[in-house]
Amino acid sequence: EADIYQTPRYLVIGTGKKITLECSQTMGHDKMYWYQQDPGMELHLIHYSYGVNSTEKGDLSSESTVSRIRTEHFPLTLESARPSHTSQYLCASSELRTGNTIYFGEGSWLTVV
Amino acid sequence: GENVEQHPSTLSVQEGDSAVIKCTYSDSASNYFPWYKQELGKGPQLIIDIRSNVGEKKDQRIAVTLNKTAKHFSLHITETQPEDSAVYFCAARSGGGADGLTFGKGTHLIIQP
Image (cartoon, rainbow over all chains, first blue to last red; front, top):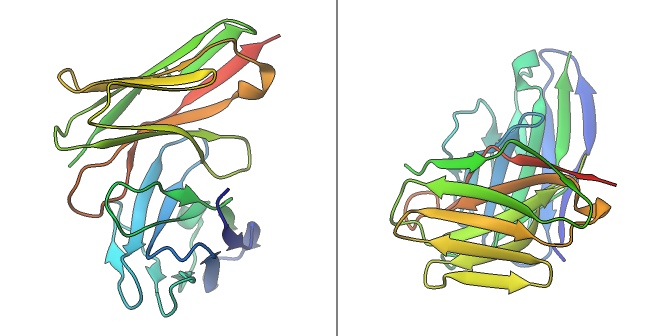
C-alpha cells in the first residue's frame, strides 16, 4: 500500500489566484513526480525530482513550478491560476533505482473559474 | 521519445467473461511495463507489471504478456467481476530521460451484470 498524500483533494479558485498543491510521502523515496490528467484522458509528466534540491521539467510543458527542500515533500505551485489550468494533478514517488514501481497519490482536482 | 498506443478505448464484457486490453510501444529501449487501475475520483493503482526479461506474468485473475519483438503487451483479466469496472492504463518506461512513465490513453472497462 502506497503512503503518498495529496492536499487539497478538491479546490475551486478564481482566476489570478496563487495556489500550492501539497504532496508528501512517508516511504523514503528519492524520486517524486507530478502528472497532469484531464478527465478521461492519459497522464502526462510535468515535473520530477531525483532528490532534495533536484527539480526537472517533464514531457508536458507546464506553467507550474515545484520545489524539493525535503525528501518527503514535493509541492507544486501555480503563481497565477487560469481556467486552462483546470485539471487533476497526481503526485507520485518511487525509489531511485531505475525500474522501480511508481506509486500514485489520490490526486488533487483543481478547478479555476 | 516513447509513444504508447492502447486499445480499445472502451470495453464492455459480461460478468464472468474475460477481458483483454492491448498496448504497443515505440521505444525498443523500454524495459518496464506496468498496468494501473484507476477508479472514479482516485489515483492510479498498480495492479501488475512486467519487465523486459520476462514474457508473461500472472497474479490470480490478472495476467500480462509481453512480446518484445513486436513491441506490444497485453492485460488479461479472467472471470471478470463488477469491481473490475474502472479505467485501465498501460505504461512503458525507457531507461533514459525522466525515467518516468509514458501512458496509454486508457481503457474504460465496463462489466455488465
